[in-house]
Length: 382
Image (cartoon, rainbow, N blue to C red; front, side):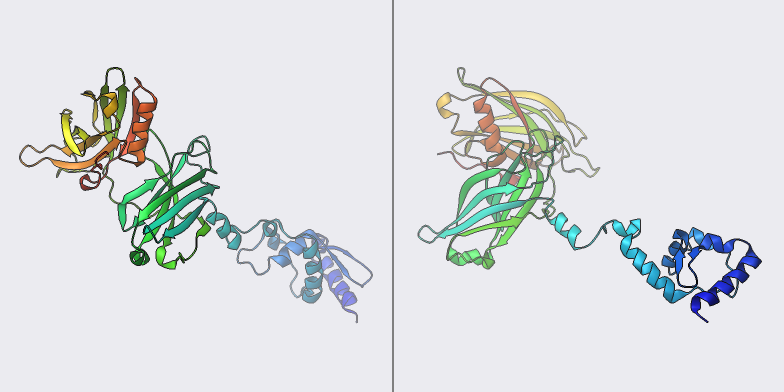
């Protein structure tokens, strides 16, 4: 007997025993030659291997009736090619495509490398960056690049800050005097930061280039994806102060405003911080001022002003150094951290000094991150 006619007889018996059960399952029958299945039947068949039974499995099924598995498989597979389920249309959240997208979320940096064998200098060019991550509320960033050769982080260079852009063109070159035989043990770090005048500069990402992997026999020009910067050394805190210079009076005013997140120095988990302000010339301290002591706090507020006489012809030859100390009545006052500003300092200290000179008679306030006391001694001005 043809398979369709045999099933038809079974279908008739089932209809007599269970009423209209078959009408909810089968969409129709075509003269014992084939089946046309309804959407609910296909849904049940496609989900037959799932652990959670679908809602259509609650339909009554007569005992002894076996589903025509091979025929249903051919029909279901044909329909599946026409219209897959919604869950199959949705892209998978993970996979090679998602990993590629994650790679580009921080941006990338183009740089150049060359070595001058006559002068014994490594020449590093910061060309441009593109697709940087937006860290400001307006959907942009103020990027700049910090360049140094590990393991020496003290000798570093920084590019200019480019305002409100995610695709900055730097075009700046820096030189590191390093003997060629020592380059193999060095690692070049080019870290991209988002500048923020009133808070800590945030790291966007960095590129690390082991110099042992670079062929310096010819100039190198390359693009590299930014990677997340590793956790930095212990945080010492931040200090906010303003600088104001009046050229006609030859007067430099430093206003120590506040500090925050200072390192805990006392047993009780707090500190008694105060700030020393030094005016340096030729690397030597020539004037000294200090704030009041704020008891039991890691976030002191001062708003104290100090003035120094600095003639116009000397303003490019002096530096200002601020040191935050923890007061101890019984022992030695211990330095928490320092920061320096001036024409010969470099980095954020140089930018703050340049902003002050570009805006005479106007106080320019900025946050600075404290650095270990033995690492921020400014160089003597020429």
